[in-house]
Amino acid sequence: MGYPDTFEGFMVRDQDKWTEFHKQEFTPKKFQERDIDIKIECCGVCGSDVHTIDKGWGDAPMPLCVGHEVIGTAVKVGDQVTTVKVGDRVGVGAQIGACLDCKMCKSDNENYCPKMIDTYGAPYPEEAGGVISQGGYASHIRAHEYFTFKIPEGIPSIEAAPMMCAGLTVFSPLLRAGVGPGKKVAVVGVGGLGHFAVMFAAAMGADVTVLSHSPDKEDDAKSFGAKEFVLTENEGWHKPLAYTFDFMLNAADATHEFDLAAYLSTLAVNAEMHNVGLPDQPLPPIKAQMFAPNGCKIGGSHIGSRPEMFKMLNLVKEKGLKPRIETKSISEAGCAEAVQGVKANSVRYRYTLVDYDKAFPNR
Image 1 (tube, rainbow, N blue to C red):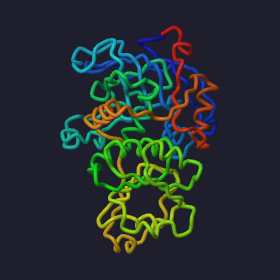
Image 2: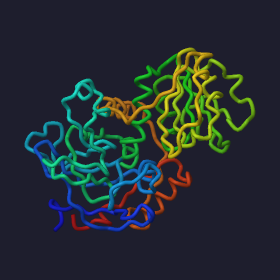
Image 3: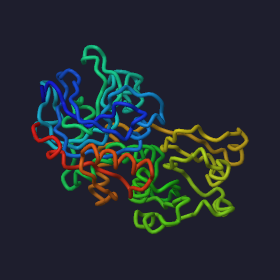
Image 4: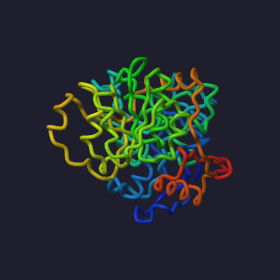
């Protein structure tokens, strides 16, 4: 049928064959009065895409088109849309719906709405068509205006794409923790999430230390703004850092292998180890006694809010921040190469899928 009745995407049909992508049509949600249709220009490849399709996070509805770091052009807007007009360059992140009426939504915490809808793999209510949401490895995406963000001029689309999830996921907790001048911040892991965290924390004025098990990333970490680089493979690495950090952002995907007591010991009194890396495996065993010496905390968060998205984009524009991006042409092979590169942790530091006009010439 084609747009606007159907969209076309590169979809996984079987989680046991998660590197096999098939180009096929799917039915989007019903177009409603606050919806925006976006012709996709590019899409970031997130670790969440891999965790979803390879069963790391459990079963997912199939067939599925993943991708929640979407940049494109608005080609249709609903009658009640006020924030975007046709022709605007916009982005969509990992959340595409919420009730917008509960106490969470009304306090700029819509990312914790109990009725939130993920950008892919989530059921829409019957009034929206009852279909499963499909993501950005596709010709188009249909999104509610509250979860559609105008992208400022001066930020290239291939760089803006991974900010829609990875960027916001680390910016929100940094902002909520009051990170700024005079604060000592530890970032654990310099990968897709961590490299954004280092850049943002440094741009916000904090004194940033990277904790990493990869010695080959030291130069990169310092180029992103870290003042210190600590190799956690070294025995006793944590001892000189006792009571040092006002905030620790854990962006690593291997927390299940950590000596948590060592990491927690580096926190200042009442400081927090905040987790945004979400590995497939459970956390290592925790004893309540681990928190007693410095009154520390451990927590986590889920993406961020609409106001936080715009604050992040403004920071990027004002400071001229440049994430490290590799591109792949979207295709069956390109999608497979990208998700395997993320799985193998070989990308430096995010993939963005491009060449959508070539893949979808008839949209």
